[in-house]
Amino acid sequence: MIELAVIGAGNMAEAIVRSALAEKVLRPAQVVAADLSAARRELFSSQLGIPSHEHARDAAVGAKCILLSVKPQHMPAVLAELSGVLDPSCLVISIAAGISSRYIEAQLGSGNPWRVVRVMPNTPMLAGCGMAALSAGAHAGIADLAAARRLFEAGAKIIELPEDKMDAVTAISGSGPAYFFYLVELMVQAGVEMGLSPDDAHLLATQTALGAAKMMTAGGDLPAELRRKVTSPGGTTIEGVHELEKGNFRGAVISAVRSAAAKSRQLGQG
Image 1 (tube, rainbow, N blue to C red):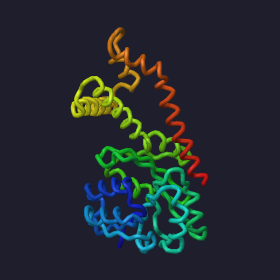
Image 2: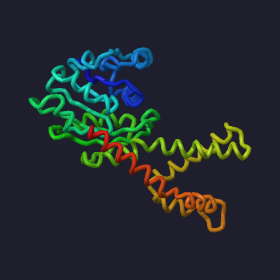
Image 3: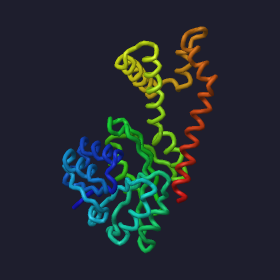
Image 4: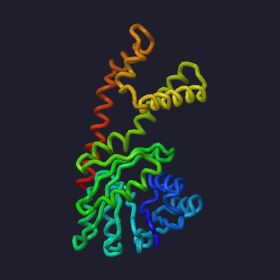
């Protein structure tokens, strides 16, 4: 019995599967994948020991659970291919931004109460420190949420939220790693421009980001208070923070998150 059919074997699917295999939630023999890309099929086969197919229908037949990890714009075609192929008892887990559980249910066929769980994970699952939010569709029950939780908590912290909050989740934690990568990228660039070697600037910036993240997740002060504690009056840090404020850093970050959420909503509307 195939426990999980991965439909779309991209980077995010790889992160999910790698963490599940590492934590022995699944064995390679229990997983099958499908992707149009021969390179991605080869990676899953050679590196993960997971048989892979070109077409979604070939991977999904007989699977107890499928993970829909294709791009939102490809979802209509994939669901059309899967309609009539899936076992009616199959649990459907989707990580596609903006695509509602109601849409997935309808496209798979209204004659069956499809159990759909939407999940928004992020790529730090590859490092075992991801974040994922779960939302149950109309027909998904406690056991379905528990199954999804078991798959994702191998590499992520989990929260359960109503589905109408998923666009905000997508904008904050789904897209969020890129914001931090961008910030660190620019810090490294500034260090190099001031005469540091690229390696030294990279180490300084990345270790600072890691330490700051650990302080924020230690369960003590909130980020605003941690920022205040390191920002002494008349010191170097407040000088840098003032420059960020002059550049409307606050507004830019909030606008970025809102724009990402709006794009998530747009993807769900077709």
